[in-house]
Amino acid sequence: VQLQASGGGLVQPGGSLRLSCAVSGRTFSRYAMGWFRQAPRKEREFVAAIDRSGGSTDYADSVKGRFTISRENTENTVYLQMNSMKPEDTAVYYCAAVFRPLQTTVVVTATQYNYWGQGTQVTVSS
Image (cartoon, rainbow, N blue to C red; front, side, top):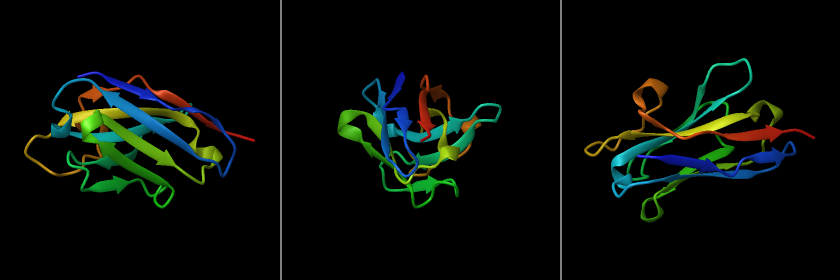
């Protein structure tokens, strides 16, 4: 399984970005997916997660009401829509996948994921 994140860039405070994560393979619908981020001199932190079907999601408190995770299983892609962005959202964003063929649960702990994308830089600045 290979993950390719894209969509990062520079945005002004209050602006929006949509990240995409394309996943190789034919069993995408059996994977729970997550987004994490890592700011300079900080540890990687959980941002959002979605179960394999797209029916359940979870978010970090810091992004609730501003970010939305979604997936399109026919396109092997998971998205992170980021609105009302703040300078503290500046980080490298990573998508991650974990095989969960029989469970419709979200996974919020980084150590449970075993596949990671390369990261995409998001900078929020005026």
